[in-house]
Amino acid sequence: MRVVKTVAELRQQVKVWKSEHEKIVFVPTMGNLHAGHLALIKHAHTFGDKIVCSIFVNALQFERDEDLQTYPRTPEQDIEALESEDVDLVFMPEHDEVYAEKHKPKNVIPKHPINQELCGEYRPGFFDGIVEVVARLFDMVTPDVAVFGEKDYQQLVIIKLLVEDLSLPIKIESVATQREEDGLAYSSRNAYLNPQERTKARHLHAALMHVKTQIESGFKNFEALEQQAMGQLSLAGFQPDYVAIRDAVDLGNPAYATDSIVILGAAWLGKARLIDNLLLQMR
Ligand code: PAF
Image 1 (cartoon, helix red, strand yellow):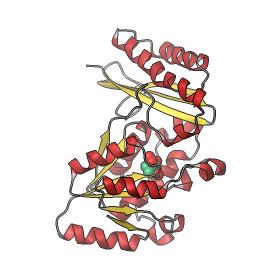
Image 2: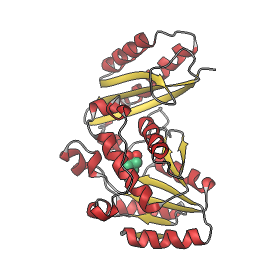
Image 3: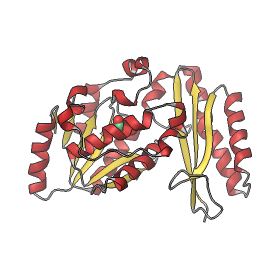
């Protein structure tokens, strides 16, 4: 496994692989890898030949400097984990390498109203920062396929829009959320939970499951279900930002004829802001 820090080294290796007709699969991460990331990499192997993984803590998607400073960084452990998952290349650039003017993609990056909704409403600039870095990384890696987790569902929808808007020849694949035994979705931010909070954390998944079960049994007053779930989370000790039931394709308000919906939730528990979602087929 090669570990490279510069765009020049990355491009040189990718060029060799492309000349050998290898299909390149890209898994972007911010490091501190957990079972969720490892599932992305396992799936990545099924989508192509050479796996490129990036580890880059993107300052542009952090609202508060404090959060950026304390974001867990475990580079040695990450490299070891990627090595054992047969990753071919790890790209670990510094901030100035990614954001060098010469590495700005030529395409103008579009901004959609959905960037300001749901998590975007509570974390201003968050999705603009993600779109900016993903567009740059796509331009550097030029993968055939890129893999993202469904846990960050809004991010996944926004990245699909980016690829569509820029007509990038990249197939976006998604992998189902990986969960601990009690239902809590794996996340680097779970490290901020103290033992008591960790015990309570399962209530986020439970609240969304409760919404799902009620919809499945025919209850269709979505607004009432969202409010009920928010109340349930507050009672369990969370400070909920939102629970929202949306169309799974574009995150719009679900129309009567919607095929699939997604139930999304974001809530603070102590210092951790947890997010989760559940998909539901309507027919
Ligand atoms: O999902 C993440 O880890 C990040 O948002 C990403 C896609 C690597 C961009 O920094």
